[in-house]
Length: 227
Image 1: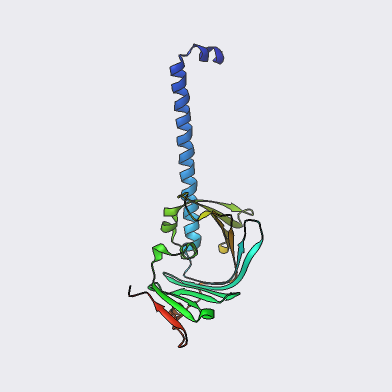
Image 2: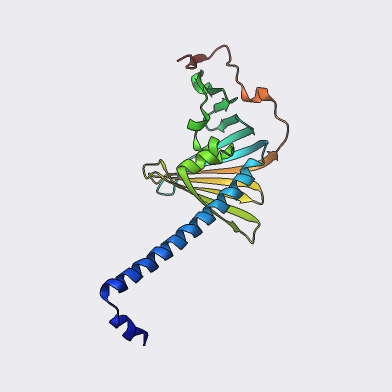
């Protein structure tokens, strides 16, 4: 009966009905996608936004497209809201990146050199944006999806860049409970970076002086703050 009815419908009317059905389906999928993204953004904002201070040891792996480990680093990380950020590579190549929210110091002890620059939070690296919980800045550049895993004991979030020319293809954040466990960054060239966080200390007191740097007397100072 239905097939006979469809054969009797004019082709233009049938095409219109099919188009309307497709549009309705697409609109429903879009609304569902927006709701999923909104829920994921809210959950991620809650997990990152409730932190006042955060300290951890970090294991960084840089992995080639072939799967081989290009570099493994040991890092000491500190964060104090709103803009205190401390990222010290201990091994294999010592380096310190630290900011108080006004000035950025990049100290390379092997080169006996420190570079001082104005700090611009909106132009900061992805790691700083994520760990500082700058969700609005992240949403500007990424679509965010997320879901619970391990029967609700953990959360996984996927960030897909809006711009096809982005340096990154995908960023994955994994939380065990409400604690950040790892960040996995897939670059467009096939290289991957993994940050794993250990020995978490949340909301422990941190001195403001931890986020300022006084260069040793024997290093070259390149001061770009006056430019």
